[in-house]
Length: 149
View 1 (cartoon, rainbow, N blue to C red):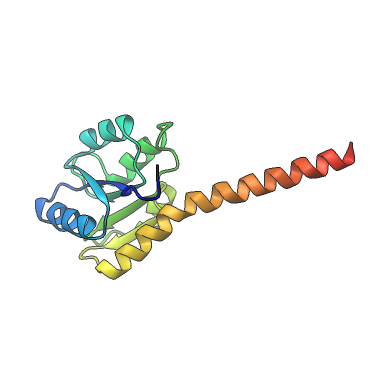
View 2 (view 1 turned 180 degrees about the horizontal axis):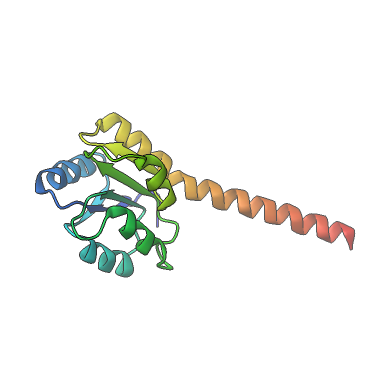
């Protein structure tokens, strides 16, 4: 994807008011949102399209956003896609549980737009930094092996 193309964000929430707020916010900040109102539609979207970021509610009815995140990360094209969880619920130990499910960040509803933009930018750069570090480490290892032979 070109740097000039808008980043694609999968938004998963079953509350229309939250979806409307997120979509408006994302468009204002130059992102290209795709909306799913339930876990089944989100899984289909994640299978058929590559997203730069996923923003998901934790409470999606029959399937939790945590379970959905785990299922999405099992997909080859989405196994490293960063996920930001949103929730207005008071759930014990939710930050640890969201991390265990593969979430990058957890944000309480209502969200602060300034904080959300910063977290989105950081979440999308983390896989880039990880791959860059792995590539450099691999190159250093190959150079060291070449010197030893």
